[in-house]
Length: 148
Length: 295
Image (tube, rainbow over all chains, first blue to last red; front, side):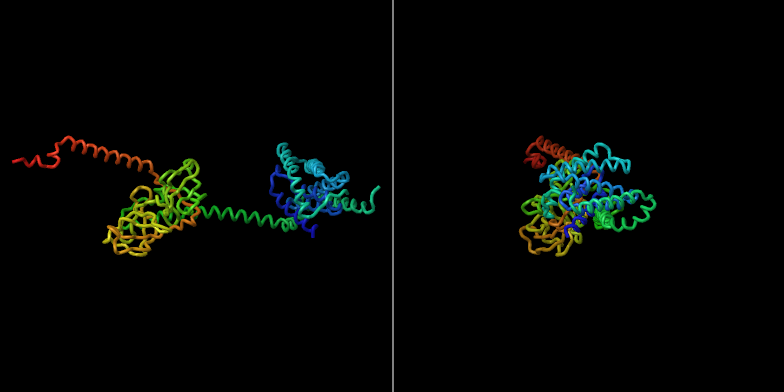
């Protein structure tokens, strides 16, 4: 049930994100990072993939790009969480890493990047939103910190 | 050293990575051709919400347009109600300028005495502008701030308007009585006034155009109290439910004000001249005794 709800949440966030401008925070990435921190690896990888798929279906002409980006970003967080020890500040660092991965992969795959101001704003907003979103998902799904 | 089962997780990642790469490597034609249908299905809720939003926006615009149309219609109706034998004149809706104002506040005690609307001096609202709705008059602006104005409703004790009976053309002054009732004052006992008659503005006073609906007579005592009959009128507009009003003013408002000031000055001049003349004449001449001679 919890997994189903997380997939539904990813779907709804993808729908929301499709209408957003480039400088809006990346809510889907927040979900992927949170799932990568708290969930088992198998499901966290799947959430990253599905998040990208939902986004890609909004623009089938670039199918695969977001799948790769979110999958790799999620997997990167899964690998990095081995060194996380029960501190939310580490999650912010992981999210920052995921953002770097996301934009770097996006640039490599599609050859486009948002303008510097928008990019900076989106990153700041995403990082600022991480702690509340993190806490909210923790509360909603009853997660506890655990080392992978 | 990796834990047992870790390889399977990594394998899943690589499988999904492979799928992603294959999807990304497909030609645009294949991507669009094969994923258009699932995309349409998955994005249907978003399309529905977008369509709903557009519909609501369109409906809101349409509602505003219809509201404006209804007010124009009411003004035109007022004109036609008043037509009876009058020569062809310009329609009221073209002679008056009006703007929509949303009710953003009410007086905290009764909620119906005073309305606060979101139009002020910066938006062209002025003191003494009429506030009407599509069913009749709602009140008049008693104070215009920079971006908000106070409208004294018909249920405000400060509100007075010259009115007439649409059927019998009996005139009077409409003001607040009590509760949700208005009174029509200065109606003499011999004047024709019945229950159910429609009361409209008479157009004198310069604030309200002639013929706008004020309300309906709900009580008309035949026995006078003092000099006049008691006439109770129920307002046509439900003030408690008003959400928006239209503030109207004559397009030649400045000219009307100027004419009014000029005529006031003229009357004042005449009165002063008459006073001077009276003061210059002797008391006997003033009373007419001097002309008759004294024997």
